[in-house]
Amino acid sequence: MPTLNEASGITNALTALQPLRERGVQIIVADGGSTDCTLKLAAPKADIVIRCSPGRASQMNAGATHATAPILLFLHADTVLPAHADTIVFDALNGEPGWGRFDVRITGKHPMLKVVAMLMNVRSRLTAIATGDQAIFINRSLFDEVAGFPNQPLMEDIELCKRLRQLRRPACLFTKVETSGRRWETRGVWKTILLMWRLRWRYWRGVPATELAKEYR
Image 1 (cartoon, rainbow, N blue to C red):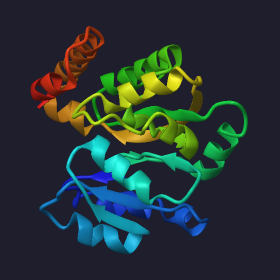
Image 2 (image 1 turned 180 degrees about the vertical axis):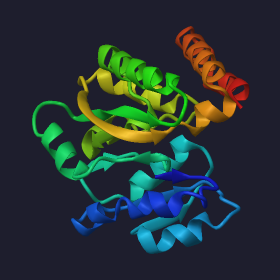
Image 3 (image 1 turned 60 degrees about the horizontal axis):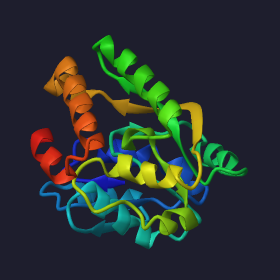
Image 4 (image 1 turned 135 degrees about the vertical axis):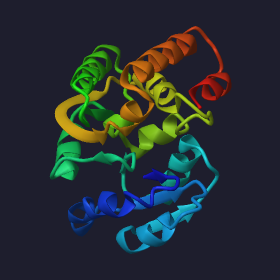
């Protein structure tokens, strides 16, 4: 779990993972330089808490280096896994796919969030591209084969999936994770939708992620 100033929600996020931890799932928090009490709050509820260079890609790669399990799952702090996610992932990877993702449900008041989630799930299933909100999971050997997340400030999840799908199609689970709609509601739902479409279009056209990250911020 990559974090940055997540003190307001980190306790709830990690508490939700304790049943998995009790069944042997290793919980790793990779912090990118929080200035609040994220690390202090995370320590009792995680197996490993590390400080590392900021940026989701570098944080998730750093966390992966400390993982000892053969399967990795990358979880945003505002995303909640379904019950028995460990069993669901094990079953999904029991066949040919070496990686996969969940469908997503976006929580919030705006009615368009249901539409956004539906479109995300359909697009992901058609393109074999997942976003970090969908809790991407990967066999460790396959993650190492593609050299982990690319070192870029934006679209690191998109680029990782592009590399993975060249090797294997993902397991696209209909089981849903829940992710917070705060990003959409804070910035404006339509404004955020249009921004993300524009950024992805430009990325597909070859605009560097460093340039897109400035526009995103």
